[in-house]
Image 1 (cartoon, rainbow, N blue to C red):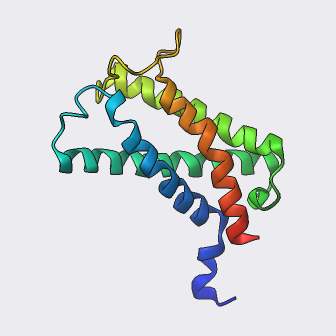
Image 2 (tube, rainbow, N blue to C red):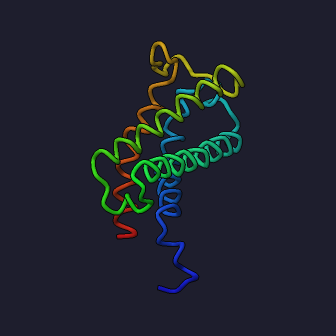
Length: 148
């Protein structure tokens, strides 16, 4: 493999790539569940969802590194065990709970609409949590297929 394209097959690049590609439509599908988003100007909503998706890609990368640290292997994703996939999701869920709390309570960057089911006690919306339960196994599968 040529040195200039080696990064294309790195786990990190592929986690970010597939994390972005899978989370982008999810962000748009969540729009009705956030207050003021359905009424936002088209371009403003696109920018908001794009920034959120970039953050999702970063969450995926940090979660990947968390599993790599625990597994002591940054190529764990090539032959991921079910426990590693669960840890990948768990890291992402924990990060999401913290970020959603900060964004909705501390910084008041956004608010949930009435339609958003909210998890009691932690106050996090159900859809952002489902996002990190549903998408990580798909990210792992796609990355595995890409770099194996």
